[in-house]
Amino acid sequence: MAVNNYSVVGLGKLGASMAAAIAKRGFNVIGVDVSEEAVRAVNAGHAPVQETGLEETIAANRSRLRATLSHREAVLNSDLTFVIVPTPSDQRGAFSLQYAVWAFREIGRALAGKRAYHNVVLTSTVLPGSMRYGLLPILEKASGKRCGVDFGLCYSPEFIALGSVLRDFLNPDFTLIGESDDAAGAHLEGCYARILENSPPCHRMSFENAELTKVAVNTYVTTKITFANMLAEICAGVPGGDVDVVTRALGADSRIGPKYLKGGLGYGGPCFPRDNVALSFLARAVGSAAELAETTDRFNRALAGRIAARIRARLRPNQTVALLGLAYKPHSHVVEESQGICLARALSEAGIRVVAYDPLANQTARTELADAAMVLDSAAACLTQADAVVIATPDPEFARLPADSFKRAEAPMVVYDLWRALEPVLSACPHVEYVPYGRGAADEAAVQVLRMLWAVA
Image (cartoon, rainbow, N blue to C red; front, side, top):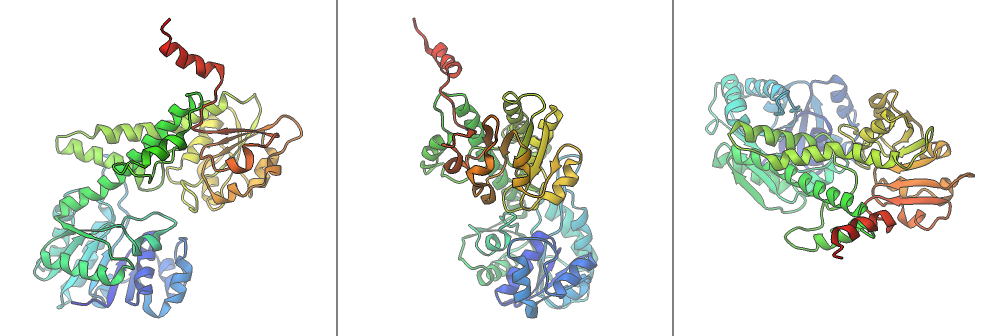
């Protein structure tokens, strides 16, 4: 059955982007949200949240996209409903279903008044058992209908990154479908074939296997990131060590690949950190262990403190550090679990005055950091006050900073570049002491460590 009418429950960064992307592909979409402000924004042709390209996409597709506060209106006027609501971490480290439960109850009540077949698709991240034992019974009870007979139910999470949600949703590496029955899975697969811009492989499976796959993908990626960060720390202690040289060769091995092998500061954001914790929770619940995930999480959470100690060791009392990069990654407003925020706090707690800047995240960072750092309105304003600089994210704005902006009348300015992003600009500047993280100096202390390891005298 060809579907031309979709509904999307939840108009946050992911849901609003999904709704806009589907409308862009020529289909009618009704968005649903409990926020009157979000609904008004979409109906006025504006983005309810900030995300790259979202404002323009919504404006260009107003004729096919509208929003409502009513789940019933959305369900009765569509054939398939995507549900993308928050599933926050709870005290156990698992994912709470509180918002999904409410949405599914409302959808079930709407289904009670609908005769035609309807497919319900959850895209929020959940753990195994959530669909079959948590949410499916709610739909059946609220609707008075049977899953697999009167309606379909699928779990189909997206593999996207904030800042590129529209592109990632329309061009995934693969689609993942956990299905209540073959008809529901085939129905959703057919919808994806018409919506997506590429033709990715589709992996269909049980709810439980799909729920585990989603968390496993993110946990594996963070393990790879952390391995590269471990190598960066090791390279920093090896005379002439260079993490970029090592990871470039490592990534050439087809069993490994180059993605996520850029040694630097740790990972953050709303997804990666909590997925390691959730997988560990699940492993314990089923009588297993996820020690690799726990070690990855522990290493990542400690990394900013260790880097702060390295920086602090090279500073004099009463010096000021300019920290550039406060979002958890470039091109993002999000500071949740940001390593730049953690680093600013660690430096401040050590008695160092910190001034900071981010191209997009200044407003939220000011709230997050409170008195730990002065968040200024530009990188230039930070540099005029700084004795040393830390490049915490590889944002292109920082790479465009001219070498003269780092010049001081007194001693050379020390620049700790955690991503080696400014190397072309600063590595040969006489007025800058450039310290690329993940590179080992060939000083006598480092040489002596290796000499003592292997002296056979």
